[in-house]
Each structure stands twice: as C-alpha cells, then as structure tokens.
Image (cartoon, rainbow, N blue to C red; front, side, top):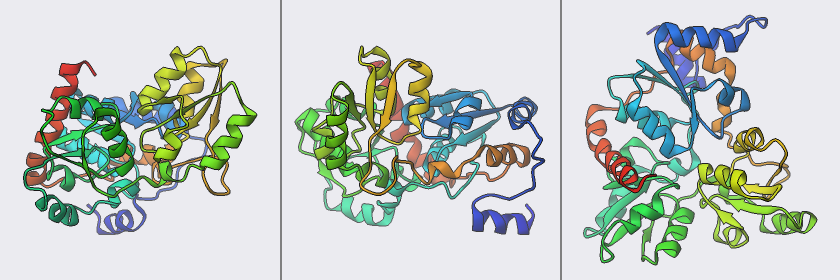
Length: 332
C-alpha cells in the first residue's frame, strides 16, 4: 500500500479522492459490486442513501448472521468498526472494508479490554456475556456474545444458578436483569446516543401527542424505558411499528431507523425522541461518518480494509458462534 495513502487513512479514516460531481454513484457502486463480487451490509443507523443501496440492512444480530453466510469475496460494512471486526471474525478469508475506519463506537470505547480483563478476574466463577457493541479483543475475553435482540433469551437459556458478568452496556444489562430476574454483575459502560434522551422533553412531547406510542431501545436509561409502550432492539422497534395499529410513534433510538419505518409505514408519523441538548434529533456521529462518496471510494480502491489478528479471531469466534447457535435454536 502507498505510504501516503496509509498515512491519510490513519489520519482521516479514509483516503480522500476527487469524485466527478456528475457521476451516478448508485450506478457506479452497482457496477463495482459485480466486478469485485462484493456485498454491502448496512446498519439501520446509516444515512438513507446508504441504506437504499445496501444488499442487506439490519441490526447487529442480522448483520452478524449475514456476514457468516455470505458467498461474496468482499464484505463492505456500512456501519461502525466493531461490526466490521465481527464480520472479519466470522469470515476470516474474506476482505472486509469499512468506508471510514474512524467510525467507532462510544460504547465500545467505554470498555477497554485490559481493564475489563482485570474486572473479569475479580469474578472467576462468573460466565462472561458481552454485548456485540464491543471490540474484537473484548469478545475474545467472553464466553457468549449477545445483541439487544437476543440478550434476554441468551441469559434465560443458561442455568439459573449460573453467575454472570454482563458488559459493556449497563443500561441493557439492567434491562436484561429486570426481565430475567437474574443478578448480573454489570460493567459501567454506555452508548452516548442512548444516554442523552431527555425524560422531561419526552414527557412534554407525549403530552403534545397523546395518541403516539413511545418506543425505546433497551440501551436507554431506566427512567426513559419506564415511560415506553414498547422496548425492543432496532429490528424489534421496526416490526412493532408495522404490526401496531397506532399511526404515530415517538422513537427513542438513533434516528437512522426512521427511514426504514417510514418506508414500511408510509401513512404513519414518526417523531425522534428529543435528547437533552439543543439538537432536535439524535444521531450517532460515528455511524454518520460513512457517506455514499466514502462507500464508493472504499469499494473502488479496496480501502480501508479491516483486519483482526489471527489469535483474536480464533478466540472471539467461539463466543460469537455460540450466540449464533443459541439464536438459531430459539428461532431468532
């Protein structure tokens, strides 16, 4: 790789290049996918343009399942770094690309593996369940990985006397503990997007929209979850809006999901739950680092590529595979 290009990727997160403004990026990306036998996996929190061009759109569980079974030679992951790492762990012989390698995750950052390892050593008789929103190194320290879709079911699938450490998200962990009645040892981590929803502003918004259903992701704080008519994973929230007879929803998760909700429910209204700041909506700055232009350059140049050390792949694959196996058994 050209040293200057590598330095630019390390500095910016991607290699910048001039793009003809008249270029039809949708058509060009389509051509490149065929040429390189590439598949684009996109998270629900990506920009609408990226969602619309993706081969598969989903939450962390669905994306992991897709990454494990794809026949493509190249996986282009329109999401954040830990998701691309998970794809590489599940498909180590495939090339995994990420449009911007600085698309990180505040939750993953809140749990440094070297500190978690010391934390884990304090509870030697505990099984470790980690939420998929964490680094490959943290997954390698785990017994089972989970997502918000299957966290409750995975805990319930274990013997009741099994002692459990749950990390890194304390809000999801507290929700799982409440739903299962288990006494979980929680790591004190959180997602900045789901932490800043304002209880006061949501209360006022509910007063202005008395018929709206308030739906929330379990990464939200307990005071917010207590107000919710429905709590679920990103996919769970989307499905709820489709099956619910309600025509108006206040949505407490990253606002990118609203694009899919509106496509699935063109006659219904969706209102982003307000955060505790001056912004009217709640976007993940890491998810939004990916753009259609970066996605095009990423496939065109085969950069930036996400790699994971072989020993980490070997250690991290086991807990991820265990999650996929349990999910398959439970029909999730």
